[in-house]
Image 1 (cartoon, rainbow, N blue to C red):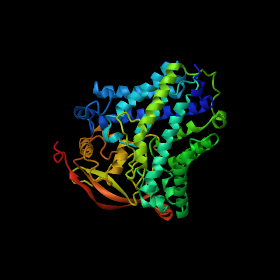
Image 2: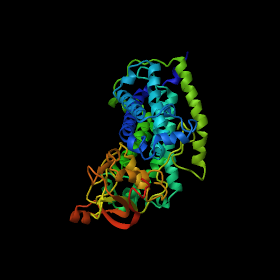
Image 3: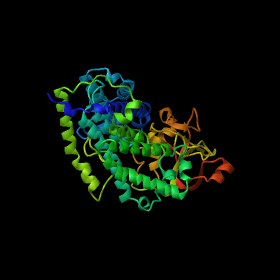
Image 4: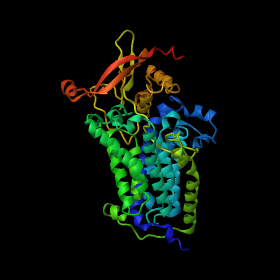
Length: 473
């Protein structure tokens, strides 16, 4: 039917890389959901899904869970996603007919959309929408024996453009520290969850931090336009994005944001770049008519839906990480439009009777000054991230913090599994409290003298001593 013009056989390697890395991101996301949902969203969790479903109709949060919810159902959805994405990662989705491949990736998208749309505050992150948008486009990439559809590859590049250019615009328009090149004097220290190398990055000379900011502006404000150029321009632009995202992944823990952005960067790379490091393609078939029509319809829909993110990017009141529809398709993105100058941490403590207060330890959130920040990404510790927001927004913990305190006071095993250290193993405290500390990375001299990675000073009491009676239990 003369559909060869819809195909891009030279980008077979690009599709191979995108699909396999996207399967890895899906696998991580579903695993996070399976392992963390009960204490956060379960029937006895901090923000129970049944309570959310009772007040929010399906038209506002499309989800399979509006048909039926139980913790077993949620677990089945999450573990089905783990299996489906794991099989896609090892190439099983390439061994099936085209229609089955479409249904395979569509199933992963529907399952994860169902989780995100009932995830409430725990799923209010830009990388959730990014995974859903990239995952939706993957539905139409086709299996290994079908020539890659050029339209979908262009849509992936358009998604990458919005991720990078949106992030660059929000920085240059937002905090003045991005314009005077001082943002990274603070960011490595005050970012949500520093990694094992974050202190090293923070201690770089001021001139190096200025170079980092300039490189960020170059890669996010100029390079994105080259993504639509001919080869080798587009491939080199994708490499620049890959390198800068790798740098960001080394300097902090941002869940699967960097992994997904790197995944999208491969969509720009032809066989001249990826061919030597990917398998040889099988004999390729042109897409059948029904698939070509479907791909063209998706392309047209994305063009129409792009009106809202483009208007947001061009408008003076640009916002970050906004979905303009309940399906999380064609979103706007961005990060760190403002940068904290000082790091504050809420530290939870408990005690029995008149014994000394003892501190709860989180898996990645700074606590013990002697503990090196761990590498967590692309895994996502949802409670640790929520704790970072507490000092920044006074009302942020209104919906979930009382539930966390209740769980600690009753020694809830599910919640305690989210923590690294429980000072009351096998029992529970009589009361808990929260203190606010100011944290900073130690200097090289301080680290040599004390072995500490952090120095901290108590600022004030964030929450007074609280008993079960105070919480209405």
